[in-house]
Amino acid sequence: MTALAIYPGTFDPFTFGHIDITRRAHRLFPRLVIAVTTNSEKSALFSLEERQQIIRDATRGMRGVSIDSFEGLLVDYVRRKGARVVIRGIRALSDFEYEFQMALMNRKLCDEIETVFLMPHEKYSYLSSRLVREIALLGGDVSAFVTPMVEKMLKERAALHGAGHPSPKPRR
Ligand code: PNS
Image (tube, rainbow, N blue to C red; front, side):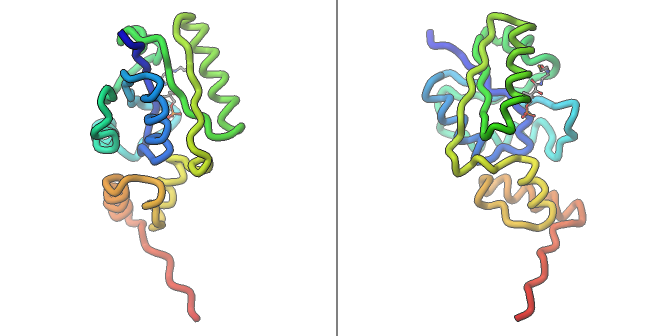
């Protein structure tokens, strides 16, 4: 039986960077669960259900990849799933401190679980869900960062928020 790995995150929304990490993780772990959760420090733009729907759409055709959600501690969820590996993406040195702290804290909580860090393609090193949300809500083009489904959902959300007015064309 091949090892099961869990790729947790808030994924608000899932970007091309997350898809890249999913592909890399899937090569190493043919059984991979992408586990969406809420982060007490961040208020989400999309509901858990919407975020799962987005990930399902983005990972269609990846056999062995499934989508789930959880509440509470990550280590408890990982244990419940019978897994021992947590996948996290690291884009740049700036991610390292937070990720290192979280990995070591999780290890303290459960010594059997290992965190495996993967680096996305460097073309995604500046990409973050937070920036994608901000750009989209201000009417910017995010088609280079997210799937068409997410782009459409972001546009709808921008319209709801009363934002999304494209910046006026500069006069010539
Ligand atoms: O995508 P994010 O927001 O960087 O993901 C962070 C996440 C969800 C992996 C982290 O906040 C988490 O594990 N949350 C579950 C609660 C938990 O276990 N907290 C203690 C972490 S040491």
